[in-house]
Length: 249
Ligand SMILES: NC(=O)c1ccc[n+]([C@@H]2O[C@H](COP(=O)([O-])OP(=O)(O)OC[C@H]3O[C@@H](n4cnc5c(N)ncnc54)[C@H](OP(=O)(O)O)[C@@H]3O)[C@@H](O)[C@H]2O)c1
Image (cartoon, rainbow, N blue to C red; front, side, top):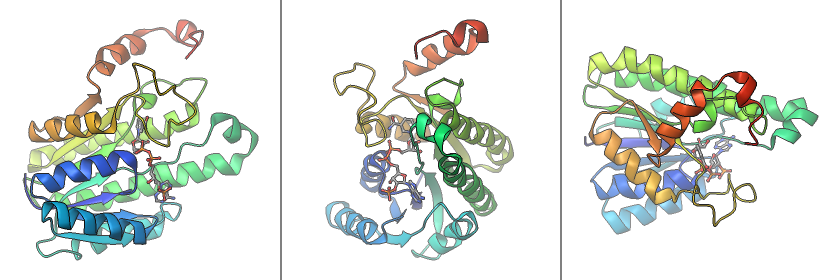
């Protein structure tokens, strides 16, 4: 795989690790983030360190209509247009806050579902005309089952995982790789204060980035990262609801 890649949510910890891997493999990068100036600094850094063609754009995923235009903006940002899209943004407010204030959950749905779906559709429309391209999105193991501690966030990720499954049926026959990434807890601001930094289950962002690059090179549809989440989730998915809801997770 070669060509320019849009990373939407380029400021995220996982996206930063993945951007380095992509730049190291010769991809040009269009970095899109809420903080366009920060994306510009990261773009300059990758240009200097890897010789990558880079561009930076701003977007705010609370506005789904404006976000849907991001793919066209990114396609025009570098010569040659886009050959890949990565969605790496999400909001994850505490479940307790979502239960207390409905507007917080709705804002998460705007970011994680409405804007994400809008970007998936505009990406699919572009990439289905470009065999050899790829579409990759960060879902989560949280989307595989509804847990007491984060079921609203989990529901947004379940929506994303389902959309990615359908998109793979639509795009793979057209020569497009569609990869749904399901990380377990990974060291980033999203897990700070929630998962002890000494937990053996806490992954490094670089590990997840490596798994994503490997899965893309093998044209895989789903990757759990680290790998052990695949068997763990396979077991958890088989548990009846009456047992699952009693687990202290
Ligand atoms: N860390 C984990 O344990 C874990 C596990 C499974 C899946 N994931 C998924 O992996 C992806 C990357 O997360 P991360 O761990 O790297 O977390 P992170 O560093 O906290 O990144 C989250 C990113 O989402 C962006 N974002 C939030 N609201 C936005 C908005 N309205 N418009 C544009 N961007 C917005 C943030 O931008 P700002 O910097 O501007 O706030 C931030 O860059 C997410 O999809 C997450 O759900 C993470």
